Every structure is written in structure tokens, then in C-alpha cells.
Length: 450
Image 1 (cartoon, helix red, strand yellow):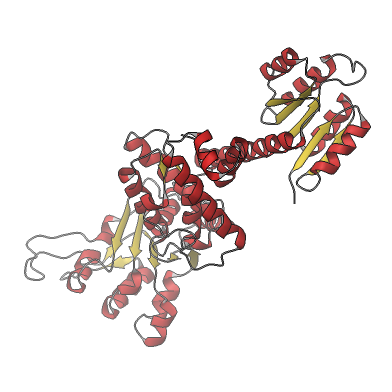
Image 2 (image 1 turned 90 degrees about the horizontal axis):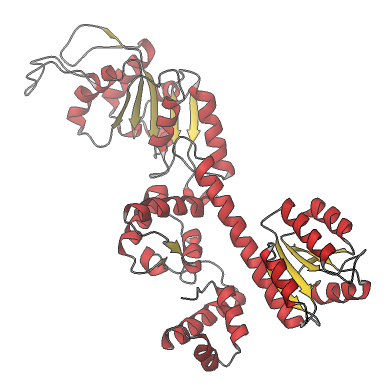
């Protein structure tokens, strides 16, 4: 659907001419006076308005138009209002600019000039809206340190809210790097156990021969090297939460002992005979398919159902629509501040590449990618090369004629600007286009003027 454009002019013929000239690119809204303009604006909130200052009941003076300008901006300061004024009324136009108008056009209006200015207005309005939405998400909608506006992440956050109020065991499923430990910490922080310890153990990172004593502790002299009595991770999580990451890597003999603890909330240390009662909540996580492991006999079915009273799925980044840019922007702000590189931004092609890349390592891979790029980037804009990502044209996805044309145009424009040290007139002459056309191309292609 085309963006909405409000045209305010008391001349019915001029309104009709403008509507026919612009209807292909915009959804045209019309008003002939201040009251009609305000009524239409309140109902639709168009991002851009074309406003003639000569409005009834005083069409010969700019006062009614200036009053309309003030009231429209009072409703929404972000609206881009372009004033249409007479050739000899430049002082009035500057007065309108001072009152908040975005720009002005002189009568008789040149259609090409107006179209170019409107494109710039809508592009600027869109960028500002995206920036405001991004800031709102970054500042207000973080959930226990996790960012996500997508439906799949909002569903995960809702599950966390519900299970946090109980002591039921939770099994968190998801690929490596999706934030399973952060989800476990969020459950702990929102539970009645938040003042108790949160103890995490990666079951795949500890040798099988040591995992039992690491979890259950041991008595002095229970095996070679056991010089003192030692509490295990389960005991140290008493009153809090125990997080068992990569639970699918626990060997079968130890699964039996873990199941007994879950059933009875008590344990014996390695080499000990004393039953020790432990009050701890267990949250487990895995990136493996436990149902396959159960079918092959590598994982106990009874343990699975003890752990998976509630299952929480952390979606992969490639399936979180809209979240990649949000999270990338958050990482960029954090690492740019640490590196004292204020004002660092992504260029348009790098944003496309970030969105198109499948992120097999998920949020962890994105974090590493942005952190490295911030350190290594020589300029103020992060490029595809800084991110060390394949360009969008190199990724296996359909390429339209429009995409191919933009790629060629971008390369030619950047080459000409580089050759002439950013001088617009010289670059435009080499490309065989006018300066306004080159400005329009640069805006369309996301090429910043240095």
C-alpha cells in the first residue's frame, strides 16, 4: 500500500491536478481549508503534508495557513509539512520554516522538483519512525536482558512469566546460541527463589569421570585425589535454582542418580551414606533431540518426563522476524560505547546482509560478529566487509531485476564519488546525470554524503 499524503489547498482544480500527478506513488488525501485539514489529519495521521498558506476565510494572507501549520505540528511534531507559497513571499516561507515546516515550494510548482522533495520527505519520515521504534524497544522492552519483538520471542517471554511463579522443572530447548541460559536466569529472577543462588553447570564440559562428584559432591577419601569433603553443585544450589545445560550429555548411570534426586529431593555424596535433603529447583536445557536419544536408549524416558514438566522453546534467530536488526543495533550501541566510537552506524547493505544471513550460531554468533566489526571498522559506517558477511547478492536467495539494477547503480555511484573525493558535481558529470538526480540516487541507495 502506498504511503498517505495530505494535500491542503483551497483551489479545487489545483488539488485535482496534484492528485492525478501523485496518485501513482501515494494514497492522496484532500482538504480545502484548515478545519478539513485537521479533521483528515486526526483520522489518518499521514507522515507528509503539502500545505498552501492561502486558505479561506483569508486566502489573500498567510495567517490561516500558518495557523493550520501550528495546529498540525501540535498534533504530531514528526510530520513533514511542505509549504507552497508565492514567488514573492520568501519571507513568509522562511517564517513557516522557523515555525516547524520541513521545506517550501514556490508557485508555480515544478512537478519534478515536488516529486523529488516528497521522496526525500517520506524517506526521512520513515527513517525517523524506525529510529524511534528501535529506541523504544532498546530502552523499554528488554525482558530480563533479552531483546525480542517477534511473536516467537514474545511467546517465550510469556511462558517464562507463567512458569516462574511455580517450582515445576523446566526443559529449555533450542539451538546453540539462542539464549537458553539467559532464559533460565530470567525464570530464576522472576521466581520466589530470586534471592537464592543460581548455579549453572554445563554437563558436556566436564569429563564423565568427574561429573558425578561435580554434581553430587564427595566425601574425603572416596577416590584418589579426594583429600577433603566437598559439596556438589546440587547442594550449593539449595534454596535457589540449578541449571543443567546440555542435559543430553549426562551418561546413563548418572541419569539414574539424577532421577532419584528429582523424585526425592535428596542425595548422597560420592563415597557417603548420609541422605542430604536439598530444596532446589531444576531447570535443564539441551540443543539435542532428546526424543531420538530416548528411542536409541541413550536417554531415559522417565528422566525426560521428570525434567520436561514444562517445555520452553527458544527460537533460532533466523525465525525471529524483525529481531536481527533490533539485537544488532543493541550490540552496536554497547560495543561502540566501549570502544569510544560514538556515532558508529550500519550502512544499508550491511543491514540487508545481517537480515539475509542465516546465523547458524544464533545470538552468540551475532554478538561476536558485531563486537569484532566495531573493533576493526576503520570508518563511521559498518560495511559488509567489516562484518565479514557474504553480500546479499552472494547469498542463495532469489535476485530480482530491481536488486541487480540497484547493485550496479550503487557500485557505479560509489566509484564515481570515490574518484572525485565526494564532489557531487564532478561525480554527476562522469555518470551523465544531473546533481538532483545523483542526490536522489544516493538517497535511494543509502549512500551517505561524506
